[in-house]
Image (cartoon, rainbow, N blue to C red; front, side):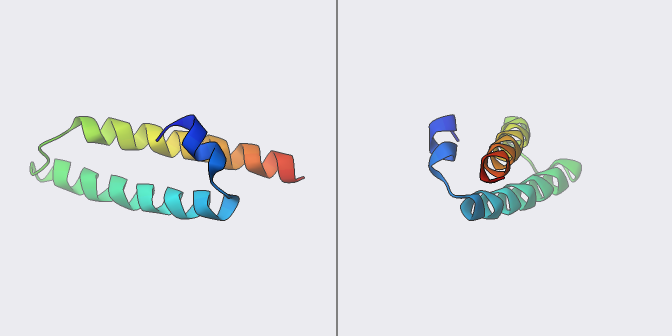
Length: 65
């Protein structure tokens, strides 16, 4: 997800998307552990998307204070 797309989301949408990403990361880790994951690069991408989302949530919380 691009930074411009993240900036357009509301704080509630960011929280929802973060939960979805964390669930996806869990599923990918389970698949990787059982050698069923074909695209291992997706793990890295999801981890980075989670970091971007948490950064954006922090920015939105800082602005609302």
